[in-house]
Length: 283
Image (cartoon, rainbow, N blue to C red):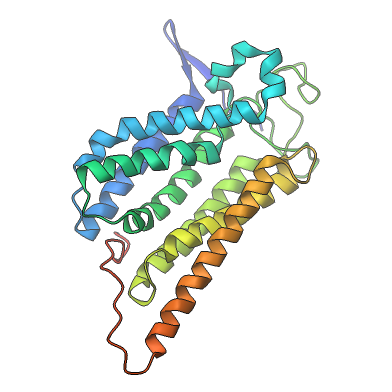
């Protein structure tokens, strides 16, 4: 199977398919977040104003972290530092810069919405957007695959000169990591939606903790089996394991604390603070 062209022309204009994919993904995230807020009865008009700021922060953070993680390469090719269309955006960097920026906008425009409630609302949106973004972004970028493979599911990607780049400008058959990641993210999204529908039984923070636990495990598996060179203990793997461990620990702590409170004799009714995320998933 030939790769989708990473660049095409509309008259004299050069259009990068990778950029179109990212733009569609960001639009979907805004649309889905507005639906989540509307279903929760939370004002969402401010999201339009926050949209561009969060996108800019996420892209800048994702690129900075990617460059720092591959500093040896970029020192020898400094012109590539800004070549986002060649790929190279760190998911962790996007979160590191994008989430605090979004929370600053929330604090300014909707201070009555708690931080944990806001993040619980956002967790399924982030996961669904990642599922779409994997297909519309890395799947159509330069060098988008993983390790070389002879398996039937291997795909070829457009490539820059290197050990796995053929003379025709395509890679050897590689593991289609973006496709696999999209399926992983879709499965995690389904779990988060299921948890979200049970929020009346769970304390605030469980959807967010589940997001960290499941996504951290998935990112570690991606790196270990398909991406990392050397295979074990690169920075992404370590960060993924830490994220997963924190997520599972917080989720267990929240659920155990709730159970203990519910069993406490002669204690007043313990109600978790009203959670904007405690709403059915919009159809």
